Length: 297
Image (tube, rainbow, N blue to C red):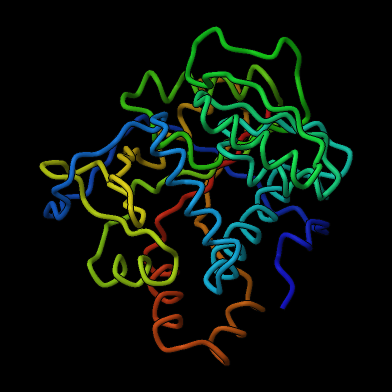
């Protein structure tokens, strides 16, 4: 079936939600990862992300992951009161090698992608030479207190970036960066409620090319391990903490929802998928590793 990303036009806006509180939750789970984690901006990690993205986009499992992302993205647009990204100026804050930037550009947005890793920005520019998508890529650290483009855009995205914040102030600085640039923002990040489970991690490694393991000696850190690479440390913050940081940044309306796929793709997997694929879909639905947040000024 067609990817949900091809259905960016949406028709209704669900009710808005506000929340407060500043509680950092943690999940007590036995440590299962023993390898030393690597920093996000390391060139080896940039290479690992490149391999992962290539596998997701080219393999059968890419359909599952793309559907989860795309359907959740559509939900975020509705929460923000948007029908589509067509003709919007969009900042992809922490763009990596440009995967989301390219998809946004293909959907008609005017896109700027920024990342703190020179290797990531270079990889994004190489992609642009090959497929000729029109995205402006710049080197910029979204966690820097004074970082900025010097102008605002219509929508800011933070896709799998905020979980890299090692402390609460850094997380707040990232939210402030979004608010400096747009009245509307959408965030995908590691869920603070997610608990790594051995069976789910095994299925993720088999079908998605990466697995999640509890960082040794911690209750609030997860190692995402990609095939052939060192683990990447992701820091877990609670839903209340993310919502409070967005409110502190100046967003008056904020909300959260789980990563979720479309009913159409779910039916497709249940009818045609292998047993492992069906089980993975069920486990991700019950224990999603990604949480989505939105903020509107």
